[in-house]
Length: 170
Image 1 (cartoon, rainbow, N blue to C red):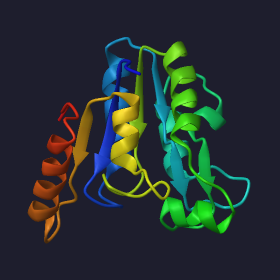
Image 2: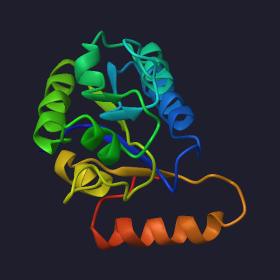
Image 3: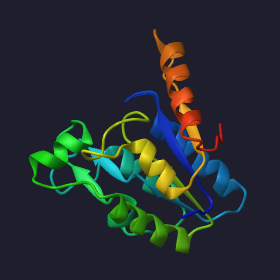
């Protein structure tokens, strides 16, 4: 699957992925494009409420999309996605995310997809965020938190992205 879009990942959680994704959405909108946003997996929201990152992305986007496509997997507990899913007896499936992405791509010129946590955060017992980026066929934007240890994290993440032969966007 390949479409016009970007996959925003980070070296870690809390590094500014949402801020960068929102900025990218605004920049693409300024070019006159119809932009959809996606946060395939979120963790840390009150019951029956959208995660704050999902809300920010949806507010930035100019394509009216179903929240279930924007955020197919939402977990209340702010823990690793695969653990959150497992605690509920669920499993995060790349096919479900890819189908939601395809629906978004069909109504937008560009889809900005924000990962959860870092590049290699597990989604289930065999797949992680890197596998998701590969499945969606999107170039990666790497966000690095500016703090002690960031050069090591950035270099290790960039090396992993390169080894997977995922195209770079920035």
